Length: 380
Image (tube, rainbow, N blue to C red; front, side):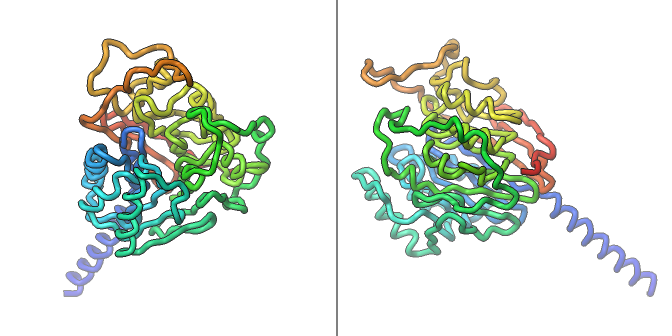
């Protein structure tokens, strides 16, 4: 009898040890979802808690983007979204929310507060958003706040037009890239004077999982990057940078990108939104970068300013005979170019799986190409 009891105790203890090992071996999984020049990212912790950032485009594209988000949700085995962060209220970041909310429960809504850029296209979405978040937990965040996510240190570094005033733990060294910084008076993409739009209100997140660190700032502007990271680097270094503003040159300055020294960068760009040569030069020349991954081949960069095809998740619905070599130049005051190539068919995501020791694997779901980066994090 004693031998039997002892055997059962050993067996139970062994089972608990194995279970503990399985739990500690789990990863933080990040799905960077193709919202067709919009944005959406799904974070799933080892315990199964979820954070969704942004919900894609509005209008007819809302159903398409909700379908794509739900495909990632099913792949992750989720039954609800625990936290939804809306970075700002432009249609390519909040437009798919109403359609998505019909399909899956959302437990908490997080945003920067009132809309500073009302418009006929966005006002009805904002009215319905108010109805949704009134029925659930709703939180307005400011720089320095933390989001309570099990197993992660999730810090808000920008929100409501403001940036953190103190450096993150381990950061705060002088930023040598500030000296050459030049402010934008005119948006280099739109040609319009820089102003106070919803882009400037973006909720930016810095996420830590063990030694692994991620930065995503929504559509934070070039000028605000200086406010955030100069004269000292308040962010420090990161392992994964999801490029700001879809990889456009109206963000992604050296003062930010080169200072944070990401080992891996992902651009959630469209077929003709993001990927311009000016931005790609900065992103690709960042010190310590190992690889850049693109959700789409961008005609604005052409083959001259792009990455090998294995690092690109999606192509076009109607593929041409060849991809253009030279970047497509979109200039003010010249005849309008033909419409951008469409991609409304099957969409593919990047799945980033990070371990607490800093090891991370990125997988392109289109071709199954996988690359592992080991012990990425460094001392700031």
